[in-house]
Image (cartoon, rainbow, N blue to C red; front, side):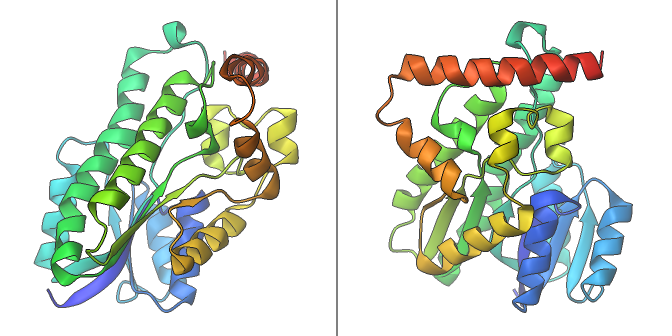
Length: 266
């Protein structure tokens, strides 16, 4: 394999775009993956063109997406030294009222695609004796979140997977990180309807700050990175609070957010 690049999924906006810009500033050559070809093309041009930031429009929820992406990179002689599994979508509301096709689409992207990308791109890292994976998780991974239940459960899956993977990869030279941001004002929050709570508004962290914390944590070899003091306090407090209380408080916060989102988008 001739050239090694950092692969960023969900790179067309939000945290993914911030990762692309920060990694480019560090001198990394990139592969940018997202559905929106126009945005990827603009970002690629801003970062120096395809030689420095190769845009590959792709819907990662497709069953064959990981294979198609790997084949495309193999054909170009490109290997992956850093995998940023950022692509994802959220879904708020009552589980029994959520359209099953939306639940399937979210799980395909947030869980299945992440696992398949990891299985495709990490083995070559192990063979080389170096590499890194950043899985973008969520503060929601640490507790049940009523009215955000399927999303929170999917993120708990990714957090558990990442921690297990860290142990399995010990001694290989490949490091992994679970990046667990709280509220980040991006299009993701607008689509998921998860940002409209008082706590989220007051604890918001910018995408650039989240990425800076992630890359600093990667440099330091930290497995779990929770950007923002309020978010770290919130997660830490859950260890001492009864789980039923944490569940109730989260449910009240996200019930209000979910009801508002439903009124805004009937």
